[in-house]
Length: 86
Image (cartoon, rainbow, N blue to C red; front, top):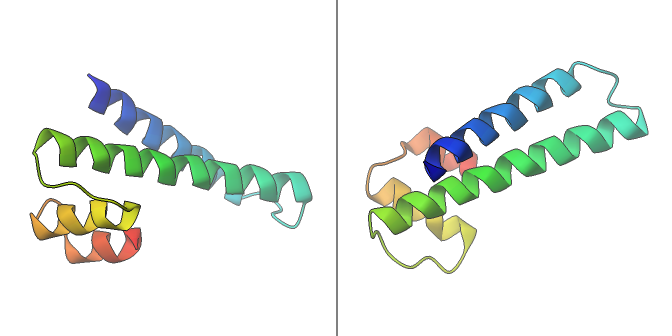
Protein backbone atom coordinates (compact mmCIF):
# COMPACT_ATOMS: atom_id res chain seq x y z
CA UNK A 1 0.00 0.00 0.00
CA UNK A 2 3.02 2.30 0.24
CA UNK A 3 2.79 3.18 -3.46
CA UNK A 4 -0.86 4.19 -3.09
CA UNK A 5 0.07 6.52 -0.24
CA UNK A 6 2.86 8.05 -2.31
CA UNK A 7 0.60 8.62 -5.30
CA UNK A 8 -2.04 10.19 -3.08
CA UNK A 9 0.60 12.43 -1.47
CA UNK A 10 1.90 13.53 -4.89
CA UNK A 11 -1.61 14.35 -6.12
CA UNK A 12 -2.30 16.35 -2.96
CA UNK A 13 0.91 18.40 -3.20
CA UNK A 14 0.40 18.96 -6.92
CA UNK A 15 -3.20 20.10 -6.43
CA UNK A 16 -2.19 22.40 -3.58
CA UNK A 17 0.62 23.92 -5.67
CA UNK A 18 -1.82 24.67 -8.49
CA UNK A 19 -4.17 26.39 -6.06
CA UNK A 20 -1.40 28.48 -4.50
CA UNK A 21 -0.10 29.42 -7.98
CA UNK A 22 -3.42 31.19 -8.63
CA UNK A 23 -2.60 33.68 -5.86
CA UNK A 24 -0.24 36.66 -5.95
CA UNK A 25 3.15 34.93 -6.08
CA UNK A 26 4.91 38.27 -5.65
CA UNK A 27 3.85 38.00 -2.00
CA UNK A 28 6.75 36.52 -0.02
CA UNK A 29 4.65 34.00 1.90
CA UNK A 30 2.67 32.86 -1.14
CA UNK A 31 5.91 32.42 -3.11
CA UNK A 32 7.50 30.36 -0.34
CA UNK A 33 4.37 28.27 0.10
CA UNK A 34 4.34 27.53 -3.63
CA UNK A 35 8.04 26.63 -3.56
CA UNK A 36 7.47 24.23 -0.67
CA UNK A 37 4.48 22.55 -2.35
CA UNK A 38 6.53 22.06 -5.54
CA UNK A 39 9.46 20.74 -3.51
CA UNK A 40 7.20 18.24 -1.74
CA UNK A 41 5.66 17.09 -5.03
CA UNK A 42 9.07 16.54 -6.63
CA UNK A 43 10.38 14.68 -3.59
CA UNK A 44 7.34 12.44 -3.69
CA UNK A 45 7.94 11.70 -7.40
CA UNK A 46 11.48 10.70 -6.50
CA UNK A 47 10.15 8.35 -3.80
CA UNK A 48 7.70 6.82 -6.29
CA UNK A 49 10.54 6.33 -8.76
CA UNK A 50 12.73 4.72 -6.09
CA UNK A 51 9.91 2.40 -5.13
CA UNK A 52 9.36 1.28 -8.74
CA UNK A 53 13.09 0.79 -9.38
CA UNK A 54 13.39 -1.31 -6.22
CA UNK A 55 10.25 -3.38 -6.78
CA UNK A 56 11.11 -4.15 -10.41
CA UNK A 57 14.83 -4.60 -9.65
CA UNK A 58 15.82 -2.21 -12.43
CA UNK A 59 19.24 -1.32 -11.08
CA UNK A 60 21.07 0.69 -8.46
CA UNK A 61 20.80 4.40 -9.19
CA UNK A 62 23.32 6.64 -7.47
CA UNK A 63 21.54 9.90 -8.33
CA UNK A 64 17.95 11.05 -8.60
CA UNK A 65 18.47 11.54 -12.33
CA UNK A 66 19.46 7.89 -12.69
CA UNK A 67 16.15 6.83 -11.16
CA UNK A 68 14.30 8.46 -14.03
CA UNK A 69 16.85 7.25 -16.59
CA UNK A 70 16.13 3.67 -15.48
CA UNK A 71 12.38 4.23 -15.61
CA UNK A 72 12.72 5.62 -19.13
CA UNK A 73 15.10 2.88 -20.27
CA UNK A 74 12.61 0.21 -19.13
CA UNK A 75 9.72 2.08 -20.79
CA UNK A 76 7.92 2.84 -17.55
CA UNK A 77 7.88 6.55 -18.34
CA UNK A 78 7.79 8.04 -21.84
CA UNK A 79 10.18 10.55 -23.39
CA UNK A 80 8.09 13.58 -22.39
CA UNK A 81 7.85 12.50 -18.74
CA UNK A 82 11.58 11.79 -18.72
CA UNK A 83 12.37 15.27 -20.06
CA UNK A 84 10.05 16.84 -17.48
CA UNK A 85 11.74 14.96 -14.66
CA UNK A 86 15.16 16.16 -15.75
